[in-house]
Length: 455
Image (cartoon, rainbow, N blue to C red; front, side, top):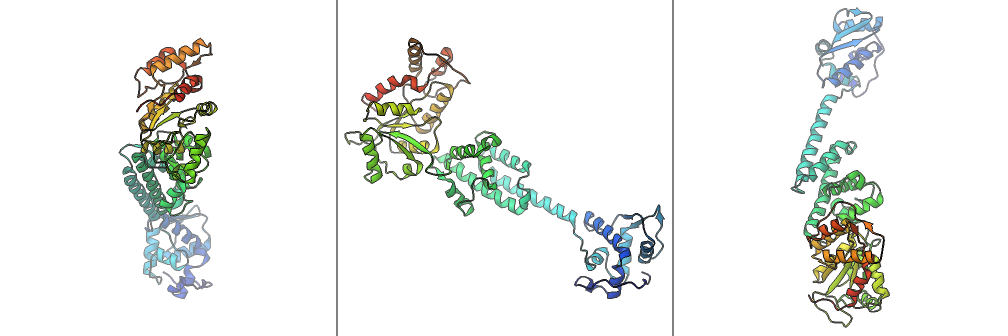
């Protein structure tokens, strides 16, 4: 490096102090500032490798002179632009009083070079590790394909990018843990779990799965995917998200949803049990929250005479009108549970408890395809017997409707085979008429007023 002309010394700081003062002052002159900016950008793009050409246009006389002194010769210009090989610049600096390459000089001048290419590679490697680890964990959730579909969809949305690899890894691990709890409970028919309880178990805080959190969205997408639903539709609004939680046995709260009951006389002697028995004796319906269902001591169920025996009959209906009619008729020697359409978490929990104490469940619902599908679920999950749900019962109901000249309700949708009667679907297809539960109230009330059939 030729001797530089005297220029104002660059400010001294911790970085420039490692260079001789004169060298630092000369290298920090304004005439070289564009060269250092260009060199830093190229080095950051090259992974700190000193290679490539630095091109600077509209080179001034001062800049050309400084470039020549730095490189040990005149720098040719073409149309006012200079082309400087970065490797030659690096070599000249190492052989000069600076005694370091261009990366070291830039650092000493207070312009540290970042290895952006290396950082990108490291980031890609870190993200690859995140998805590999998450894929292995998700694969343990189920032998089915849904965990991988769920994880791939999450990856494609890019929703975790802003969290960085470590944050995303931690969140995915929590999501997999939450889904594992849901899957495990569903597989063993355990009792429902509160969302706050699940969140506390997974994240250490009861609010970890609150609506709107990234973790809640991840878990809900997994639940929807496992159920074969479109995650976007299944989580479109707050009611849909609550319904999705309930479908997985997770309750957002334990008091807002209730199950309609009538005539349940639990064995316990506490005030809750005595209250239910008294309401049953007076022919009053009762709405029970999930919290109440969980704390009642059910034991065996008793009839009006107080006798208790395993195998007590509990009728299960789909429409609240059946309960209303039974109460209006003053029937006090029956036990009813109403699903009120598709059963909610609290309904499922109560039916499971009644089954577990040995109660016989007998189900009636609508004679349409959704009604048959619902009856299949209740029969399969709880071992419920059909109550006036055979092909003969359906045909009699259709005949009675025709005799009353009631408007026929067309049967619509895809046929569903009944697990309790292989002839029912064929009869329904042949008649093409939907029969809702309210239209057979007289038949159902007659059954409720008669002695319970023998087990």
